[in-house]
Structure formats: C-alpha cells, structure tokens
Amino acid sequence: MATTEYHEPVLLAETLGLLDLKPGSLVVDGTLGGGGHAEAILERTAPDGRLVGLDLDPEALREAGRRLAPFGERVKLVHASFRRLEDVAADLAPTPIDGIVLDLGVSSHQLDEPARGFRFGDGPESPLDMRMDGAGSRPTAAALLADLSAEDLERLFSEFGQLPGARRLARAIVARRTSEPLVTAGDLVSLVRETGIGRGRKHNPATLVFQALRIAVNDELGALEEGLQAAIRVLRPGGRLAVIAYHSLEDRLVKQTFRAAERGCTCPPEWPACRCGFEPSLQVLTRKPIVPGEDEIARNPRARSARLRGAIRLEAA
Ligand SMILES: C[S@@+](CC[C@H](N)C(=O)[O-])C[C@H]1O[C@@H](n2cnc3c(N)ncnc32)[C@H](O)[C@@H]1O
Image (tube, rainbow, N blue to C red; front, side):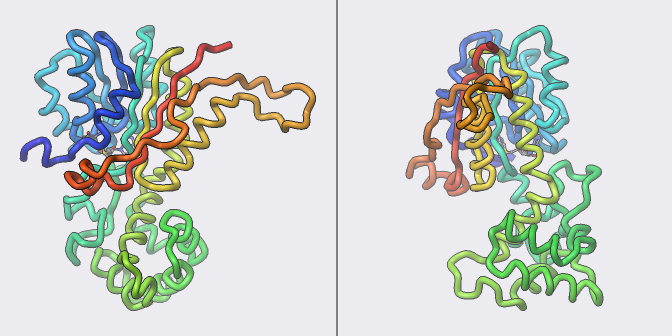
C-alpha cells in the first residue's frame, strides 16, 4: 500500500509553521500514525535533526518505520502512549526537546480496517473491539457494552457522543444483553436502529455511538489530559507544542489546558495576593484554532473537523 493511502497528514504546513523547526531540532511525534507529519519534520530539520515517534498501535509503527527508513539513525520509534512523554524525555536527557506534536484520534488506516471495529460501516461481522493498541490491557467495546450499568452507558453516550436518546439506547442495551450479547458492529447498529433514536437526522446516530465507545475504550480524554501536562513539563523553554484535535471535547481540553498554563496562578481573583505559586508555563500562539481550508477538505474530507492549536514553553521563573 502506498504510504499516502495509509493516512494523509492533516494541516501539515500549518503544523510545521507553528513548530518553527530548525536544522538539528529534536522533535517528539506522540502520534506517529503513518509517519506523514514525522517525514515532513525530518525533512525540515535536516541534516541532523532527530525525531522520536510514539504510537500505541504496533501496525502504525511498522508502517511509519518503512516510510521513515531513509532517515536512518535520525529516527527512533517507541511503542508507547504519549501519556509516557516523561519517560521518553528521561531517555533523551540531557538533550532538550524542541518540539512536540500530537495529532489525535485514529488514522484513516485504522478506520478503514474492518478487523479493528472502529466504525459501523465496516460490515455487520466486524468485532466491537476498538482498542488502539490492538490487544492491550483495556476492555474492548463489546466488554463495556456487556458490563457497564445503564447509568454508566448513558453517561458514556451523552458525554462522549452527545447522543440524543442516550438513556433510551443505554436501557435497550441492558435489556438486549440479558438474552444475546452485543459482539459485532451489526448487533449494535441493529439495536440503534430499533430504538429509533436520531431518526430523520442528517447524520447516522450510529456514528456518534461508535465514536463515544472508541473514546471510552481508549480513555482518550484521560490520555490527552496527562499527555498535555507531560508535554508542558518536558519541553525546553522556547520549545513548541502543536496539537490537532478532531472532537469538540478534545479541542476544549486543549484550549483550557493551554489557557490555564498561560495564566499560571489559580487563586481566586478577589484574593489580594497569590498563594498557589503557579507560574505561567506557556504562551499560546493560537487564540482561535487553525482549521483546514476548503482545498484541504475537498482533497481529504477527514480533515473537516480538525482544529490545530499551538503554544511556546516559557522559561521557568
Ligand atoms: C491521526 S493519526 C496520526 C497520523 C500522523 N500524524 C500521520 O501524519 O500519519 C493518530 C495516531 O495516534 C495514535 N494514538 C492515539 N492515541 C495515542 C496515544 N495515547 N499514544 C500514542 N499514540 C496514540 C493512533 O494509534 C494513530 O496511529
């Protein structure tokens, strides 16, 4: 398969612009995927810049490894979550990290692979798995549907999918699983259809249901929260962070984390003096997120929901 078919990098020029790379820079790509952003970063930091690429998915690492092989010793690939950025930084020490990029979510290849069960259009027999690392320690989507209470399922669908009818679907799942388990995409899609939720809406409600399950299975928001804090801690002063989000909850978390790091002090404004001692640690580069232009969306419809934000690490006070 040609590498561009694996995953077309989103907002590539804009991401490179925010990272402001120089020859010799050391960059960590926390979401390597097909290696599209990584390849462009290595070209921009030639002749001696280095890149450490992380991914949870061993298949992504294999694909990116093939693509980035021409860069030889300049590349190191690590099978890990970006939650572990501090371990990665400890291995690189004392070399300072100049840039970190996080391009969240799943790659086109993961979405297009029926065996991964990431979306409902993959055919009725595709398993409800959805784990990004293929077979990690986390429960599959089928296990969540089998084990969570009706209240927890409702919370999952309304919080992560903003699904109208979350309660109705949660109750229908609990009623159905007493007679037959939900194990395939087809089982879940039929049940969503039977509940009638979202009928007449522009978008198929099953899209929201599958997205909510994927976010829960991979604890995507928890990983992002930890990964952002770790990224701020390990960047060198003057180093840059670029994050591309595809979901409003992720983008909100990035925006709020950046703002809080820029503000520093968390004391109530009515207090006469700061008691918390938190210093500003970021300068935000994007007051509003950078979004793809019409050309990019026409070329790559999956870029449509992308939101890019960037920040510079400040000197510690
Ligand atoms: C949108 S793709 C990245 C595409 C990449 N920028 C490119 O140009 O090919 C997201 C990748 O991040 C990986 N991923 C998601 N969450 C992760 C995490 N917490 N830690 C490491 N990798 C993660 C996924 O497995 C997927 O391969």
